[in-house]
Image (cartoon, rainbow over all chains, first blue to last red; front, side):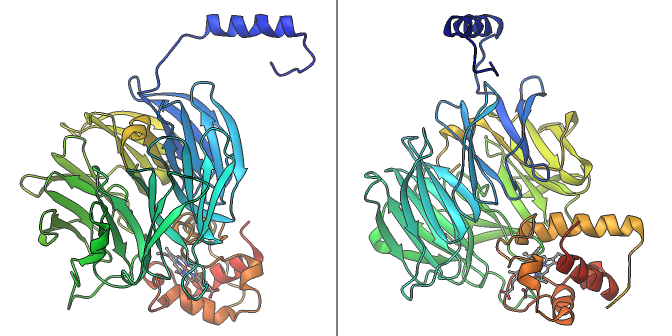
Length: 391
Length: 88
């Protein structure tokens, strides 16, 4: 249907034919692999380990992330260059693409699936779009009390059609209530700590935790008790110890919440911190191979997989949550950037950037069960994220 | 700094490092991220020696880490020149 000059009847015939020849399929086992250098994505499926197609022309995809529509048909891709692209996974095409800012870091989809929020670095702020049309519906600049803009980081969705985000320079956490998108109601928490660099929300949508770069510690907001304000936890977890230079900022989105415990990457240390979720105190530290970047729990929370910052980024380690022991060290190759479990966790997909490959491992036996070629792959995002708060 | 030119294989390694590993903070096209933009426009007029020092030893109080463990002074100088010219 590339030609536009065909008669309507002819067009209809082609459409009908198209429907008859394409087999129906669901999207629950689909996913997207970001090819960061090429500005393209691969659409993959996890049942047969195949690549269904590639979509190009998505701009600068370094640090790209993906959210899914609740019907798991559309992927919203946030590019570093401020591009927001809506992709149809079934028809394998770009539905709509807008350049919404100069420089962005990620986004989130609202509880009702109708809004897409994007976090921007320059100019800092959050823009909210209609998920169907990508029309702008709200623009919330990130100006502090002195009118200075901040980079927005750690944007997540929260119950009540809210979004929560942090301001890097200003050190603030903002909660935006978008039940009436035309009139966003923003609650600001100031002086939460120095340089929040990323944040996460627990799977139940209750606790928002921002990691601080400028000091050791985390800022915690209990969304069920907002009047209690932001509390500092794990203050000075590295007191008296030499912090190593950080070659890649840890990511908090995948912080593992394993029932009562939260496993988080320590900044500038070769450690994963274990936090008790009832007391919010550190209850343990697990020495690991390098500075952790992603700390990701298997869906059953029995295991946690960790990858590392440059120059230790050829390695992946598996922590057994019960014993807190490292039960496996894998060396997939140079520059392991991301990991994503299949919906129920029997396998994990690992992107190995400099080897131009995605490796697939059995999460029980640690045996490699498959691989796919990809051009400088970074993030891997499977559609079940559509139904998880904060992803 | 000046006329140093890394061998071909090392050159490819350094270019990959710039795009990918510097890119994780500065953006793969170096248009900025958590770190400042490193495009020729943004760097023009700044002292190449000072930029070379920033690359080698980092910038205290900011997330910019020291890269001296992974490259020589000459290589850092070559990176500055490459940034000033714009990535190939």
